[in-house]
Image (cartoon, rainbow, N blue to C red; front, side):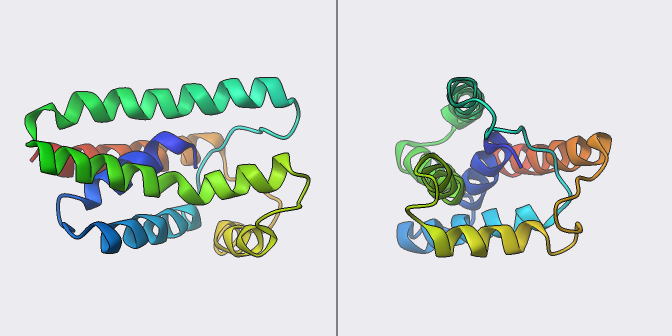
Length: 149
């Protein structure tokens, strides 16, 4: 799953979980659960420079949506939503470090992460693009609903 839906889902948890440590662990756990669903991801192993642009654009899009949405919340809620959004993408941050270090760091986390990716979808296969995009659109829609209510 690309980063923006994970970020928004983590932020949406802040509407129900107000304790920062519990929110951080919950947002990371939700990341893995969302990775079970068939989803679309961009390939970032081919060219490092292009990968960095994709990652920056993805995070930027998630932050732009999040900053627009959290304007209605108070300062404490805004911080919690940003906190949840950050921890919603931490597992992918660990994976990026793993890949860019050629497997030197976060090896166990990467095995754990890929376990969740292949729990439903057969290993090294990809769901149809329409299904992956629909799943991510649903995650974004539910997250925005929770953030805006």
